Length: 201
Image (cartoon, rainbow, N blue to C red; front, side, top):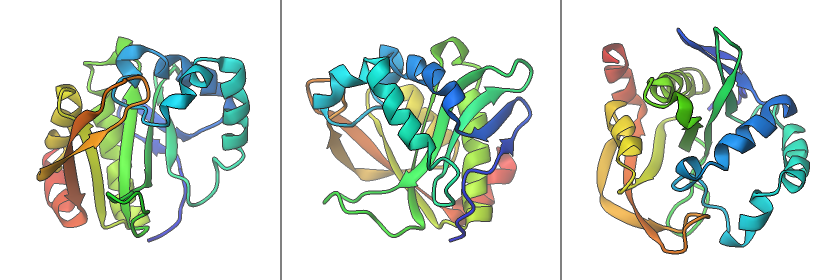
C-alpha cells in the first residue's frame, strides 16, 4: 500500500480536494440535515448535542485539519467545477471487524455524503468512482469492506452499481441520531473486480 494522502482528484464535473477549514462549516451544515446524517453518522449517541453545536464542532474540525495533509489520510471535500461550491465529502478510512479491531491497512471502508439539493444528479457516484479508482490503482489497497442500511436503498443501490458484492451476513449498527439499532447489508469490492468493471462504468 502506498501512502499518498488525499491528492486532488478531478472528474468531468467535480474536484475532490484535500480538506481545509474553509469549507468545514458548509460540510457540517450539510451533515446536520436529518436526511443526510440519519444513516451516515455512527459515532456515540452521547455526542448528539455536541454535534449540533457549531462552536463545539469548529474546535474539532480545526484539530482535524492539522492532519488533513498527512499521507495516511484519505478524505476529500467535493466541489462543483463550474461554481466552486462545496457539496459534500468522501473518504476511504480504516475498516473494522465485528470485534471493533482495525483490519490490515490495505482493507478499507468508504463513505460519502452529498447535499440533498444536489442528490439525483449522480455526483455521489461520480466522486466515488474517482476515489475508488485512486485507492485501488495508485494507493494500492486490495479490498473495500463497507455497509449500508437495508432501509437506505439509494445508498446500497449506488454500491451495487459500482460493483460491490452484497454478502449473506448482515450486521446491526447504532446510528448517532437514531435510538434503535439498524440492520445493514455488508458489501465487498476487491481490486481485481474493480479493474474488470471500471471500463464499463
